[in-house]
Length: 90
Length: 480
Image 1 (spheres, rainbow over the protein chains, first blue to last red):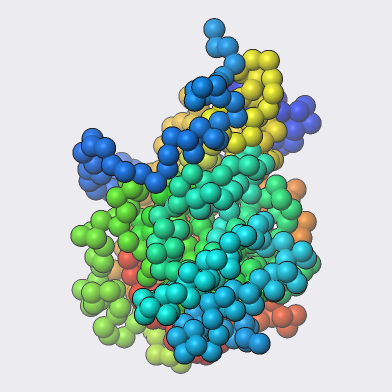
Image 2 (image 1 turned 180 degrees about the vertical axis):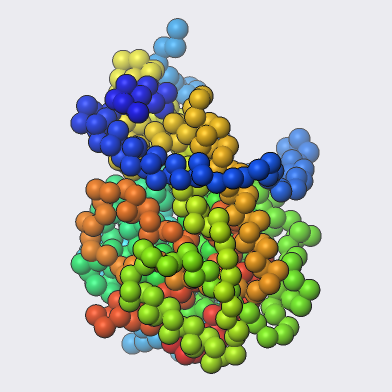
């Protein structure tokens, strides 16, 4: 891994990083990755997750919820006429 | 004067019933302690302004006869649990002003029982850490020795309980975040079976691992909280329906997983042959002697893949973190930085809103999930996780419990391990197998070091066998 990789990951994750932090993250990532790399040596064969699946979806019917539209709009950093306001996209 | 130090939930309930003091007087006694101690310990980020009103409501229940065990009991809640109308910041600057628009299911259940919420407690940012030092709101100190960390990530809840700033405390675990601070603060901490307690309204870190987890000054207090919180919740897609609970892999176990015959405890010695403080090893051996005195049979067990648990965890968790934390974008709620373009709003809001550990884990998660590395890291990790789970469940065909130390070290000094992420991560080396395999685990105080720092051991049991953890815990605490 090199500093370009860190920059690329930060771009994908939409994180603004200072040059110093990029350096220190590169160092941390190398340390952590060399620790987690030990799983390479494990022979897992064709093991498959033993999960049993259950349908957890409810019917698509209106159910009362504790929160209101207003309580959600209140949290918007920027809004206009009850709509969420964002910077120009195109 | 109420003797808060020796107060338990059960004792407080008896006293409230007998009218020795009122719910308001009890709450005020704790508020007074908070007033005295919190500026130094920093366990609470906020003390709610309606405590007295809540306590008055609870008192009414004693008058009309509808009071139950938790009525009027003061509770501290971790800052990542939504409580309607109150800030839930998850210890992060990015949620500094975020007000919960609904109650988490656990809050709803505690409210219904008449519990009194004292305040929200400090935590590592987004529950990422083992020492409550990554919070955007300063470190929490260990009340047993203020130069040391309280453990984390639920360090605020643990410190509040240990310093008698509350009678009950709720935290959350992803990998040891309740058991480790319980160990460092001399408390009992239970990580329930994955899916036992609802995660609805909990700010997620690693969805396949997170569980709301109670602390207690004794095993019974922990059990009282667990019994209230453990139930199926249709609003949490990973909540386990009643029909699938209580299944036990061993025939000699009764309905609630409590052993009907002589109990066997398996010890995976090979997991802590090295890397564990000598004093921890010694205390562990003494604890085994006590368990033998109590009639338990101790046997060696092998968990050959468990040594990879932490490595697996540090792939799966960041992968889930990078996905979960993508919702904090500076657009819909939380901190939003001013910038010229949409893309810059994202980058600046996230770059300055998240702390260093959160940024580190987001980057790590993005890496292990990225094209070209996905198979080597994430896919491999979920297979090894399966292997670990298989092994743990196989061992439970032979023994009732698996026992290890809770943490490989005593509480360390503030500031330590902050510049070495891997050293910090190793605090949770014994926690990971339970979280990865979804089985319940309880941390129990097991004595004190010569300098007065607490030791702790932890039991794991098969899925939904919390009752057998309480059983062994209650027996063990009589000898400690």
